[in-house]
Image (cartoon, rainbow, N blue to C red; front, top):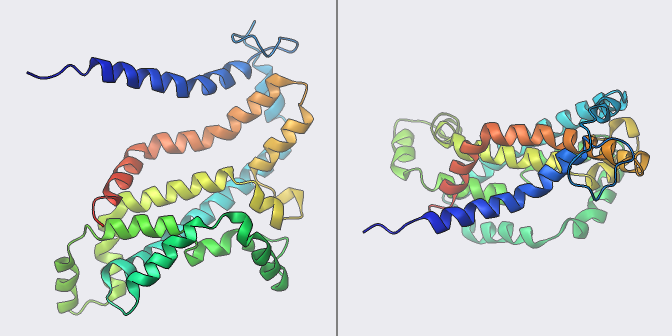
Amino acid sequence: MRRSTLPAELLGLATAALFALPVVWMLLSSLKPPGQPESEFWPATFYWQNYAEVIEDERLLVFLGNSLFYAVATSAGTTVSCCVVAYGFAKLEWPGRDALFLVLIATMLLPFHVTMLPRFQLFAALGLYGTYWPLILPNWLAQEAFSVFLLRQFFLTIPDEVCDAARIDGAGEWTILSRIVVPMSYPALATVAVLQFLATWNEFAGPLLYLNDPARYPLAYALQQFVSAYRTQFGPLMAGAVLFTLPAAILFMIAGRIFTRGIAAGGLKG
């Protein structure tokens, strides 16, 4: 006799409601009219002027364009470079491969603050301070160890016989990677791209460290500016927070199923 799943479903709904509560509170707070206490959950009236006040700020489009450029460039770089490195760890035999992979995984334990100063000194010595290069270039050099790990795990699920058959037919490693492995790994590649996009979209410390021109700051910096400008105006502040999270939320809803498939498949084989 099949056991009832009702308790598990109710627990899942309660957990989802608990996590959704801050988002609902943010949305409702963005519609509160001026003067309404923050402690009141429901808006006295739906005051859409809060959004108009934020959108009318001319800097918003500049910051939005900067964030899109920054996020797309880093996502593309991470996906391409980590794909190449992960293929080398998964499908090529060479001395010290497994040991070097363990070293790569160990770098995930290093927090950003440990490498912040030497990286800053390096880019300053190269004359790249104040440009986008310190923010984008490392992503084209496979700096995301977790992305390499995720792609390697996915590549291991592809039978070696497929690659060996291509080698017998005369295909090189670049051909095997681009024409066999990549087409079979779209879920994992999409997962890496989405994860990097979301991480870049929310990043604040990196742009603040390397950029000295406010016109180049991403949207995360704009949100901090809104906090300073609208400290006593809670409605516009929450409206800015909603607009900041909207692109990332839309992306995740569109790619959610692919994202889930990529995460699940990435842990199938060790």
